[in-house]
Figure (cartoon, rainbow, N blue to C red):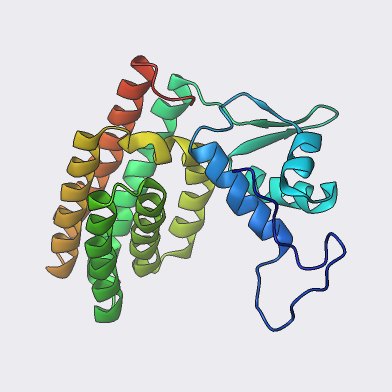
Length: 236
């Protein structure tokens, strides 16, 4: 990822006001997020601002705004007088957080089965179908994006704002670890099968089954991450 960002005026060129571009800090946060999730910036590594400003052809101001976004997501830690480092989680951290997430997702499923509109259910089923295409194309970044959209949609369908906010706060602590949960092809395929069963239970509005499936799905992610850590496959 060595390209310079097209910033529309940052380096003296005139901006093209006929084209809608995301703000520079948003572009930077997207690129840095991908670098972290893909392991180009490993856990525990110091983020070197000067190197990144040169790499992307930007000033430090938008870069620091982007890092604030990633800090809010739990992907990096901003340390006073020391700069920023990529977040690293211990096995104990993950073992503490994931069961809580699993319980929250169980509750979200139970509520969504009752409260979801037909349109919400249809969207979740469509996203699940799209998820299968990313597995066939081995597109892990897109898989993660759609996977997150499915979980977010189920949470939204629960209609419980306290649950949604609590889940977002806790999930941010293990954002990177969740991305790395499907490192092997067999786990990736199993996760897809799990999502198929989740969508089916939602269509049938079977709250007990949906809640149980979501709980098991999150605990399976934890198991996958711990297996990968033991095998030395992740930088969590």
